[in-house]
Length: 445
Image (tube, rainbow, N blue to C red):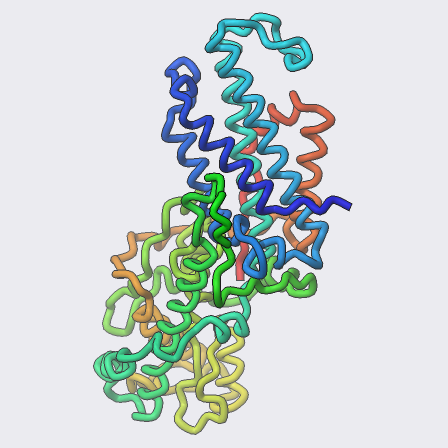
């Protein structure tokens, strides 16, 4: 049984990658790949490691999280070893160029005996594409491993995280919805403060996981532990994976529709702009929940933001579960219909219990109330919210590839690519060049 740790493999990769990036010959213009592209990939690798604690040891480490999921750990270790092989190949190319000597026969493996700059350029481009693919596969696996739960949020927040915000948030609700019942105003204000608390807890947990990543590639001789106090990696549980990865059909309106929704007075909801990586195959770290994700449209980004915020809660004073938050409109409105709304036909007229607008058709009430709650939830975000660009005509498809429809699909796909690389390096390299035009996915709610 292989007892290699993820952290040890990662540290070797980081050390080798940093060493190679100190070699100016890598950035020779004839080699085609600019320095910024190489440093971007190093940055992506560091973000992945920091996000999931791959460089850590002890109970805060990825090794600890995957202690009962050896199949996933094996795939991550194999990816890191493939990364190391690519870096060794890159080092050989640079050495051969610097010495103006042919590569050793045992290292050539079918390459031309004399490596000119054209050969070196093609070789370096292949290695670069392979490295980007390996990092993308690491991101794919991290989406499977880091599955958030409400229990995780409760373990990470501190009571003082929302201290001082409660009266401020209540006043904000009162100014927005002066006609709402006072108990509902209190409830909505408290919900905003609790969202601030939850987001702060997630941010603090991310900072703890990332501790030490900037110098993780350096040799440590002082015996300083990289284990962080108060941080315990949540164990990966197989049964939780499917729910996180399945693309659920929501039917009707989704939270994402609010990306182009308007309030009753014509003002548009201000959803924060997507981070870099929006609309492409690139994975990125959400600046709010700090999970790795993708977003191929503004609708999918809005869906992700509202899943983080869980904006929906009961808006009636006499509710038996007043503090229950929902991240999906469907579940929330089912609660309203079951416990508070008595209209049985879609033509019934309703009055908004928050703003007092009347003559709303019963079927319009869901959307109307949801917009109020989504706008209030966005107030909890820790960054300045900018006006969303016009995207009313967006029609991007949020479908998920079949191979991601269950958790083992990701593992099998990564394993398949590694096996292809081992059996046929040239074909794997060719497919690597095509990887930018396929495997586009998004984990939808």
